[in-house]
Length: 159
Length: 195
Image 1: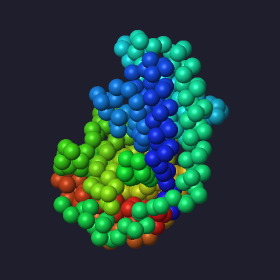
Image 2: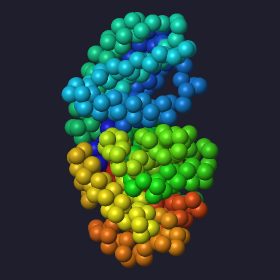
Image 3: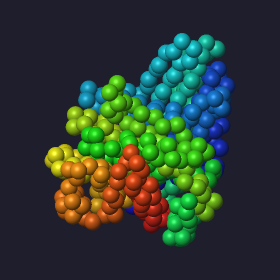
Image 4: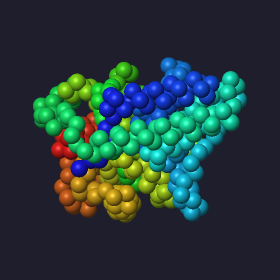
């Protein structure tokens, strides 16, 4: 059986809210929440010009590679990363060992401020994710996929 | 690990193309990218060396359409085939929903094929997966080459569990979409069981 990460409306609204507040309080350009496999599920700020799908995949690859480096150095994980650019800086952190929180910021903010606000957002995200995991594990939520028929699947591939 | 978003009504799945170096994994993705409508695909990303050998992975996001009101998105990844990139291959298998093993039909690549297949099984095991329980298909690439081994021999050596298999000539697109469709169907069918 495939393990599934399931996102529900209620928790997504809460996560989006945390992103909005972090975006505002950290004076950030954009905030992204990505699962460790590279699927983006929440954003805030100036994301229209960003290729969020590609960024998410690369961020997840980056975090996975850094995690593997940590383990080779007998570290549990490197909890945060910072990339400094000429215009845009990137702060990447792992939240509750489940998701990746990315903050893009420029000269309107500073690393210190971003770190401070990320800490607060991280605590809130961990609480939301805990609820989400319990909810999806309980299996009480409706699933549309059990009703998928062979025809539904075949129809996807009719060119 | 598939990701179902009830809020945006999306379902995301990860498919990994595995196989020995130079077997044509990246070529499969390039063909799919070139033949897919712009609205159904994202940017293809290749983390490659200067000599165009895959260094970390290739990535291609694809939308296949809607199923019961849910948009289905597949993220296609390749692994670096060269033996010494094993640490990278392990990372890319994390969260996989379906695997395509791409074999090289040439006689002189048989040993590399077998080694890569064993490596796939081993690396999946380390992540807690069993290849025999995952949505999995096999593609025999480079069927147009004069030194290609007969299909029966390839099947015997590389497909003992008789999963769906396809003959391919990836640069010309032969078998490329058949392979993708087969693995995508298996992934969705598995998802239905899990749902």
